[in-house]
Figure 1 (spheres, rainbow, N blue to C red):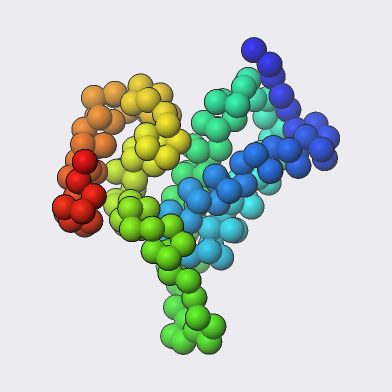
Figure 2 (cartoon, rainbow, N blue to C red):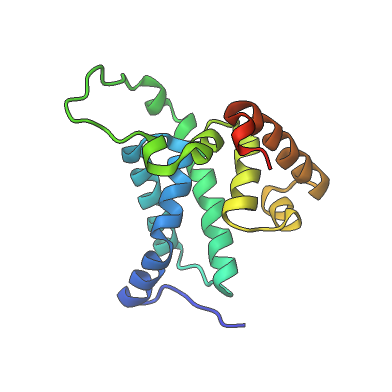
Length: 165
């Protein structure tokens, strides 16, 4: 087992390069807009740099980033500042929609309630087993399997027969 730490600027640049797209996509699925997703993703990397965490391997690194990203997104969504923000009524530049950028399925996943989204994201997009997800989310494996099953049912309703396995 090789341990790695973010000890030099080069180490951090490598760490960031390996993980920036992954963390951003995960944050975007929660935050629903690019600016907030970028802010939270940046906070995730700042936390990694400040804590100087030692990663046992790439799986440990990815797991840590997944859990921290999800928790930081949930905290940002709960913050009082976010609830008091007024939406911009007119946008002067044409904006690419989430659907254009990520496709129907990812947009549908991002609309799921958090408990389903966590399980689906970690299982299908990150490739973790239900046992690993159960450990990360501190839930029994049977609960995680149930969440994934229920999420698939919800996604079938959202997406229609076109995406049914």
